[in-house]
Length: 119
Image 1 (tube, rainbow, N blue to C red):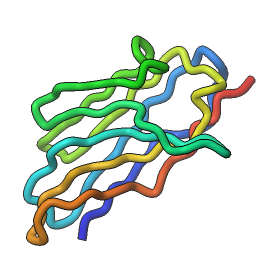
Image 2: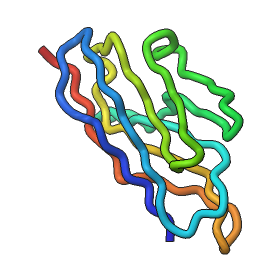
Image 3: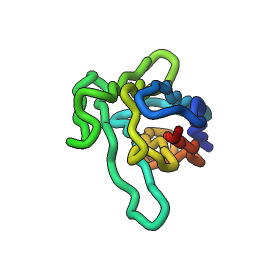
Image 4: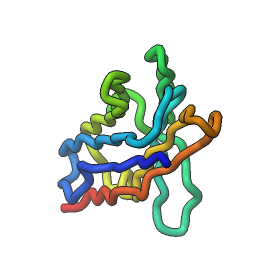
């Protein structure tokens, strides 16, 4: 069984910063692509940023230049550094990973962490 656990969410003022972490654990042979998604109330879940095992990244236009995704393959951990936060960044942020176990390749999600940007 694989678990993805997010941490680092919270309440921050506009213009502030937060760093999210996503730690994968369990019977993991390898992790391919990983990504951060978010879902605001009444809206669909959207991709925020993604990163390949080799470190190639892509970002939603709304966060380019403000957010940075990274990962530590040795620790099976992914990060999202969020700077210059705006109220519209308020959402539940979810971690996603493409994981290879004895069951083969499967897609896993974390439980989500709330990020609230408000004065």
